[in-house]
Length: 195
Image (cartoon, rainbow, N blue to C red):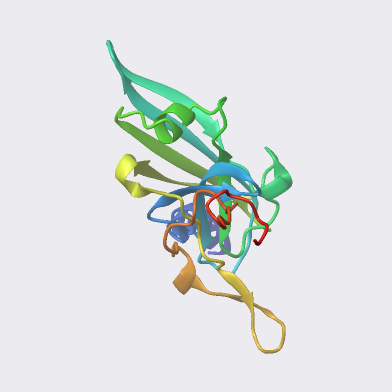
């Protein structure tokens, strides 16, 4: 009976784990540490952590004369680079820098009108058992918001303990300004001196 129970639990668990990983319904393009990035947020609704989390994507786009073109992309978590996220228990924001080497640059930054779909894959392992799971979602052009960022989903309570706020999981405030530098014009010459 024990062996049968362990076997059934091992087979039934991966589907349950994948169901408790949730992606933000919309991706956002905005500034992160001075760089324009495509950002997605993911949360783990289980109260047990997942480990070795990696987020990758495949960009499918129509090209003239070709049926469909696909390109793979990597997402990273802050300064981890291509290393997997070691511990996933609260909402995380993954980034893909939109520089000129990014396959998404012409599509998102230069205003290309090509139809595309970005399919995002999250792969992780359960701490303790090492069972792996994978969850995927996709984003179309109309599901990407520009000049936005996600509100913080992690804060402190009155006693200084971390508190996860899932109500802000996918909240994006109104558009952030494109240029944070401002020029004060006094007397119409753009100088900052008073006359």
